[in-house]
Length: 365
Ligand SMILES: [Zn+2]
Image (cartoon, rainbow, N blue to C red; front, top):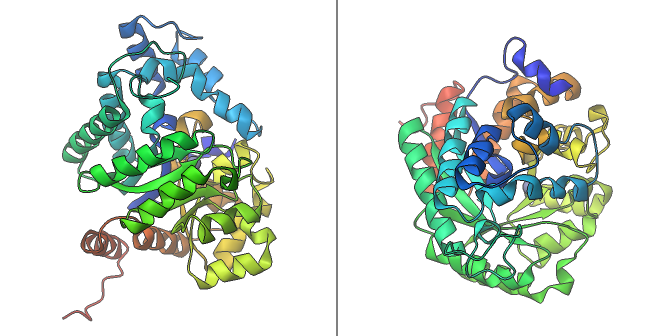
């Protein structure tokens, strides 16, 4: 598979990168899952790294539903455990630093890692004392420690889940509470076939987010129709679209979003393995985004489950879609411009990229 090619020879893009779409709970190390499970006396479906990797990893294109089932194989080990939650956030920053990422936005549902104050409690856990609020606090601690040790910047986005509308108002409240402490935005994740129209609570949460100046992204047009993208933009007032590949099937909408400079968070390997796009990478909608000079970025989405790295995603773009060094730089600059940092920090991040890419000009002097 293409993702193996990253290990052979030079990286496709060896310069500083910005990653905007990666799920913290889809980016855990297999070693950590096994270690935590052992410490907690939790029995998983496998006891060794190769065995567990094989069970968790999606190796060939499947459905989004098959993919979502993978989380149930390992989340019982992590959820509800303070040490584990902090640890996965910390290790995540280390991994990203090694991949050459200088700014990362990690996303997760606080409810999916809690075992108290959450209804229903997920992953067949017993009730405990880790609330969604505690989860955010723990992730923040792990990210901050990671920032200090690995010298990159890490922020987070809190996810609402499409199938759990009753959590959404709590999610936006947590975004508000922690907006000056690491949380930069809100997301809506999960099964897109559950249209938000049936879920006024998601709408209400996004309305509140907009009112309070909380940045907004929405998973849309990944496997879903362009109409889900339109809803995300027009109803939920999304500033970025998670994936958005199927937008190109509605030319009017696509044109409109190009004009609006809407940001698409693309994840090439993910889109193949979840069955979101044609498995033939040479027919991928990202090629259209590139040709049209659209505003988009490249991310891993769930590297644990896709057995991928950010490097392997870049490799795919280079090997199958004709991406050049210039385009890699352009898409990272777009990622920085569309990130959810406050303006001043965004400017600093952009300057870091311009400098690393040899694009510093002296016009400011
Ligand atoms: Zn995602």
